[in-house]
Length: 389
Image 1 (cartoon, helix red, strand yellow):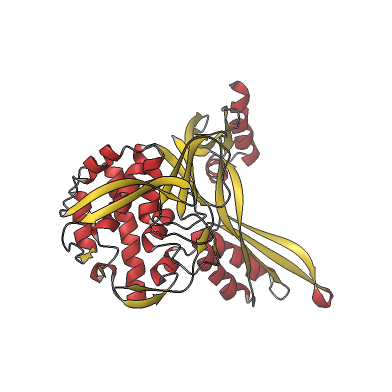
Image 2 (cartoon, rainbow, N blue to C red; image 1 turned 90 degrees about the vertical axis):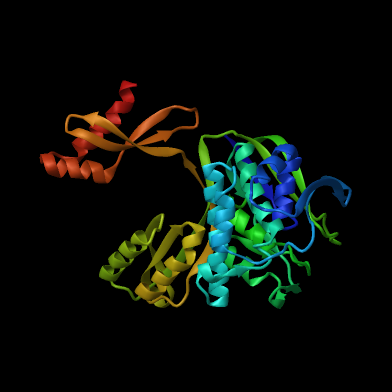
């Protein structure tokens, strides 16, 4: 499998994403053939070579034959996807993206997801963009997609709901937990379709990971911006490390009025809610008070829920947050035969490709209690397996 980096220096839309994949090597002929298995009629798919600021790329156009921009609800879109000749994985991921869109639109308009009637999102071109992009990721064997921070525009745009602010409400909601910044451009830089695709497909947001670049593609947008080329760039290559880089949210707050009992309960609540790590550090605070700094690491999508726990359970009046990158070794759970029966361990892949085993605390603890033997004996036995290789 390959890695890819989506460089969103000019934002992202569904047609730009699909165009970048085609420019990077996705066969347009195969793309058209598979998309023709969708029960959608009255459109023609075209790919044109165009330039923006003297940089050339592929622009994908969906030409309608007559007025085919009918409203479609989530049930209809599910049926369209399921009746296609796409792989099961592409069907599932495409459906997941539309379900997230329906959930977001439902919250905005105070309706259940099944009651949402899509306008722009349910149009033929948006269905083609989403399904085609998910298919393209699979067809190009991209196993990990990394995405840059997302530039947002400003101003207003006309939609089926009338004049709405940029970024559109659906776009903002979809990018919750994603690092964004103000591009300074009065233009729609990110469409709801583009936001849904990067949120649904990316494994991490931030800097480009180490890779050997093999292919480069540019997807062309439909505008000519004054300060930058309206392009989306994708870099596809081989991963040069057995490590994985991912974006995490870091939350911090300083406390000088919480009892140790409350802090212990706070840590339990944070871990139960999905925190990746929770650390308490002693600090010296104002008025010469000893205090505790609480550091929480989480997935970006969990930032707000964990921040809510910090406010409720610690009594803090403010929580700092930032996005950071962490590099982790690939690992998986495995079972090995031991003198005490089957035992779960972590199988970790090191940088040079070799593997080693690490004890899993809860599994070792259970065996130690069941057999009335020292916990360290179980740990030493597991780590000893690495010396026997």
